[in-house]
Image (cartoon, rainbow, N blue to C red; front, side, top):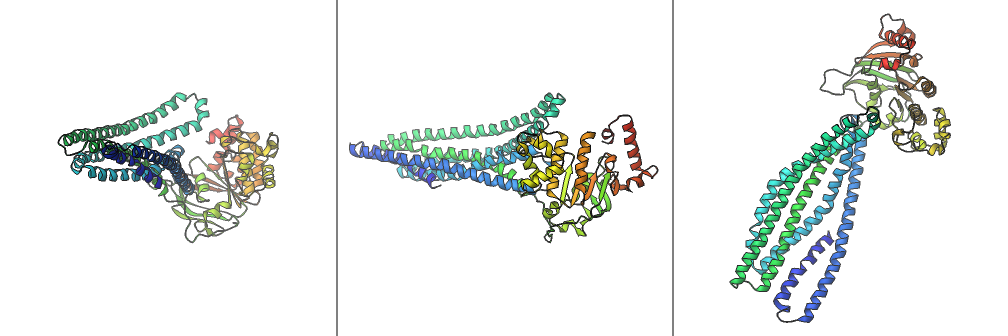
Length: 566
């Protein structure tokens, strides 16, 4: 900021020296002083160059660090937001807020104060200096200023709104691209590149139209501003000429006035440019605040840490709906218990509420009514961190991070040693495969584990949970997408993982849960049946019996039971 101010101060030397030379040094033929003034001006410009370097380099670094701080704050906020936020917002749109929006804020934070200091100094100096030459001529020129203010006020509101539309359109494009790239294999498999292109083009055209409006208002503002500043020059030339003709001003002062009027018009043009940048930055900041101001996942004030849970689980009259405006509840007064170390299986048609039960236990969502307790403690009285440290989850859709096998297994325990990682891999039946690779545990698995088969991904996720060593285990259709041979291998690892842990299993293949201590049939948000495998099969016209018999009947005819159940 000091260098920006110094830059402007050096800039005013030129008109001052010009006037002095025209009025005194040149008419009086003071050659030595002309040379001295020239050398002084040259040295001043060297200093100006160094200050300009500081403004550009350090100013941009301030903006970059500010952007990094805001991105860190935004990322930290995203990590604390509830699941419901990510249910309703696309990844690409979130990415747009972290990247392009923050870039505009950074540019405003860097250039905005610097430009305000420089333009303010230049305007004040020009007002004082031009008035010192000839007050009447200065007032004539300044009288054109209100026209600039009127133009800026009229155009700015439309420009700000068009800037907001452009930001939303860009976020939509980012969302479309992220979705298409993530599903590129499906797109190619179904030869639907043209369809994806059509979907992308909708957002792309909306972006063009939004930008059209933005650039339309910007062009009007710039053209009108340039025209008004040109009027300044015309007024200065004609008025000054009349004053010179009438002897009200000297030739030196007239020449200086013409040179110096640019010191009044230039900062005005810069202010107009700053207003445009301000609108862009404000739009980005509004979108930044939309996330920052969202409520985060929070524990109750009296919630406490529990280092180790035993695993006695109880659902008592639990009701839940993802959308409070909907009348239908996903879970309708659900009640059941899972004693420590026992295995309970949840079966039933898709959409019945099985996975929702699994999401409520680690407090990914909160029930509208009822109580979920572990070891007699309401989970709302337990901190989320300590609760989730005691729960391990293996899902059908495994998410792996870019990195090595070791990195992904170690995700289950932050301070895991290599020996612990190896032991977890052995228990998950993936150790031998990892060792067969040239780089072993350091082998990169690709984005989301793209280089691995479904079974290998699943075993890697199981190794992660082995390393975590939780008291409670949730298996959400962990083997439903696997072939029979791979399923047998995975099932062996899962049986080992379940030992000594309270386990909730969601399964479509009923043959995998025959040995569960209790089976709950969940349909339409209610528990319709409960009992062991044998007890449920003895119920005439029971839901479980029909599901079980239909699966085995289909198997006899060679039909994949997974397809029927899904």
